[in-house]
Structure formats: structure tokens, C-alpha cells
Image (tube, rainbow, N blue to C red; front, side, top):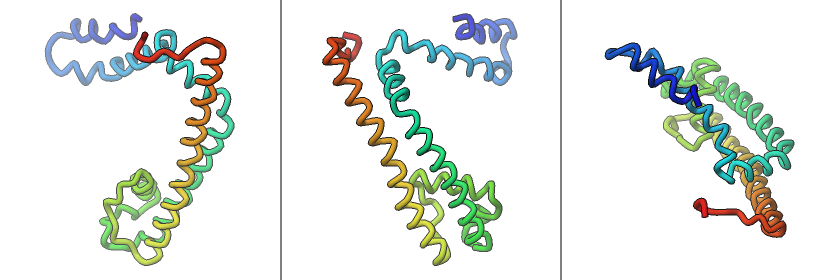
Length: 162
């Protein structure tokens, strides 16, 4: 509780000026207060149950996604590093990691790929779409199972605090 209001008092003590930049880190600590929200919002406890049941497959999927991200970014760097149409977006591996993350998110801002880069892009789309389907399906199934268990146990899930 103190951490959530402490930045306000530090700002007030520092007086007017550019104190916003000085306490931005402290203001970020307010997000820690959300960790206590599971006492008040039932959805957090439902998500916690689903996570505890399926954390193995969700962690494994995240690890596979991370490895694929690095592999695809490295391949994009290798195939597109000399492509003048990208202005250095794939000029080194860190830039390629960033651009590959953007591409994996569905934003195809740079589409002037070489033919081999186009093949890699199609391959990446097919793999990533299928890889994202695994945790989405797992979470949907888990939420359905937890909800049906709670209904059977007489602990109905409340919506809107009612």
C-alpha cells in the first residue's frame, strides 16, 4: 500500500519541475499492487488454476517460440542482410530479432524481400500461426474445465462483481 502512494509524496516533496522523470521508476512500482488483486478479482484465481494445470505445455510452447524466433531472425539476417530495400533492418542479428518480432506479430511493414526471404516469410507465418494456436487452445480448454468444476462444486463464477 505504501509503495502505491509513495511516488506522489516524493513528487510533492521535490516540488515543481522535471520531477516526473525522477520518479518514473517509483511509479512503475504501483504495478506491484496488481499482484494483490487476486483477492478481489476472481478472474486472477481462475487464471492461476489454469496456469497450474497447464504450465508445462505453456512453458514448453514459450520455449519453442523463443527458439524459433532466434532461428528465424538469424535466417532473415543471413538471407536479407545485403538487401538494400530494408535500410539495415536486417543488417545485424539484434536488428533482425526486432524486425522478426514485428513480423511475427503480424505487422509486415517491410515486404521487399528477396525470393528466399519470401519463402522464409511464408514458412514463418505457417509455423507461427500454428504455434500460437497451441497456447490459445490450451487456455480456452483450461478456462472451460475450471468453470465447469466451479459450477459443479457450487462455486459459481461471478461476473461484474455480482
